[in-house]
Length: 224
Image 1 (tube, helix red, strand yellow):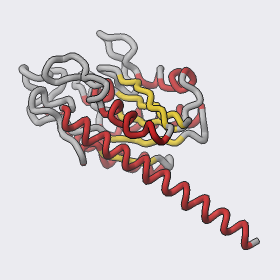
Image 2 (image 1 turned 90 degrees about the vertical axis):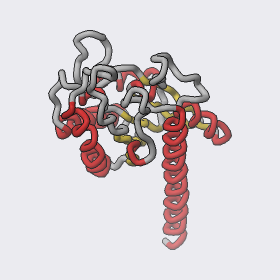
Image 3 (image 1 turned 180 degrees about the vertical axis):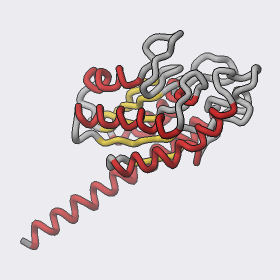
Image 4 (image 1 turned 180 degrees about the horizontal axis):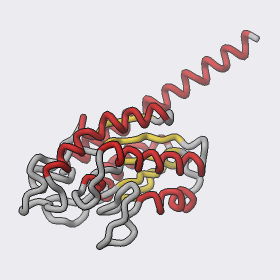
């Protein structure tokens, strides 16, 4: 059985923008993906945590620094065949004062750490959804500021380049989903469905590419 580890923040955890609780398993994009892949004998493991960053330490909530936990989790759930990595939203918080480029370097550290642990690990890098234009306002999440919104919108291009550099698949969550109008930050049920379908398509594309590559390899061997 192939194993996929989904490593992310509150939008992987399934945080509900309307109640602050957690969506049910069959509503979270990871749960939807698991259901869609069960007949393909693919196990989907959820490792989402509210507030998780790439490399920054949260001074209020411990254990949010992603770089400290990714490799141990890959080892915990070993063997892991594919990593789906979606982080960066919390890195946009004003307290970290991180530019899009610095956040990209954080993602790079995660990719390099994962590949050092398992050079054959397949990685789907997902740039996060954009923050809503009003997310910084008091009624939403003042941990962000107006600059945070602009930073979140620049991550797509940076992550895309990073994916190409390290031979990862790439998906921009912002191309298929947007934050809920309720909190300007988290996916609603429609967003979770859309993201699950987009990730599924990437997985199918990857499987097709492998089949074609294997067929070409076999044909080449037969010609020798």
